[in-house]
Length: 294
Picture 1 (cartoon, rainbow, N blue to C red):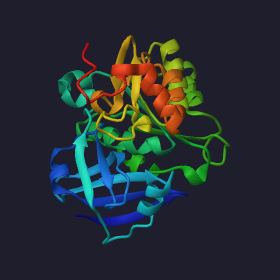
Picture 2 (cartoon, rainbow, N blue to C red):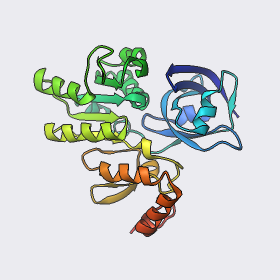
Picture 3 (tube, one colour):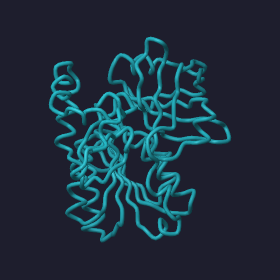
């Protein structure tokens, strides 16, 4: 059992939980995720890691209510437990594995949209811990749905906040802020990391391609099973078939076929759609079955 040490509502239907999971905390890195299961009746939910403390043995997760299982999880309080808390899974962010001196030479821009601010946070924190100042954009539909602003401000070199409706700081999409930073303020970036809703990542990648900024996106929104067996997170990256949970969740945003991924995401929600995808994709439907090497 994995005890919840803190449970906090960040915004409407969005919750932060600190979970006692020493083995996971010792091993996890920015970019990875965990699979959480409440109890025997609960669904296995893949959630990206928001933060971790190796000394305290805790891992922080952020969940949004989207169905029955997450509704039940959101009702948990301090002292309650998860039956399963498995991880870390997936591949860590590329910069974690690279030569630190090379990473320090680059100018990074991080973009978090909505709940995507949660997986962006540990990456920005890692940068600060290694002496690297980065620019961060955090966007939300409105002020009430903005999360982790104070935490992000403490780690970012510069934090830019925007809301779709203009209810807080400035009005506009995160793409508007990117344009302003690059085209008006004359800032230059070597890498952009964008995490958030699929449609946001699509348009950020479209813009950064025009601006010539290499871009990394996280395809965690399409994960379901988290092990590659269900086929939900199958996507095309360039001319290759990949699976977000075993090959990612981070990929080159300029190579991801977002339209295909979003269409599959909708089809996968129904039994009929899942059967159709299996029929259309054959042996490449699953990612962890060993049939996808050729």
